[in-house]
Image (cartoon, rainbow, N blue to C red; front, side, top):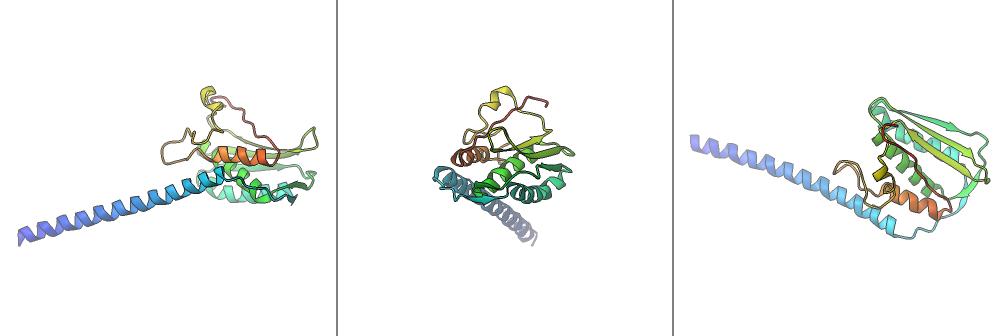
Length: 187
């Protein structure tokens, strides 16, 4: 009797271990699926569908979406959007992807209670600029030149693929723009 009870406990432990392992396998499969989807998106030549876009409206939508995640870390996202920004010709879904990638990165870089400021404005060449600034820990000089490189990430394993900024750069360049970064450690 006692031997049977011990065997039942071992069987239950093995069943729980199997369930835990299967859950982890499923989680990793989902992660791989997302990585492959991003890789395909990066590799595929997406032809922009150019149309009239209210960039501020797109930004407000993405800021609202990002605020949900940021609220968990008590991060404030402030939009300083130029109301005089005119309607521009671009691809709204591609712009949404870029803005979301930038805000997700900023949210991940900022500590609990930090802040992110998103600014829109016209520039000197009749184009528009979007700035995403955060008060995170900054980027070291050796990493600064690599952040738009596919698969480069400073995040812990499992927290990033290193594709978000590479994809954003590709999208911005396909739309005829440019994306830049300035940062220093501690700033």
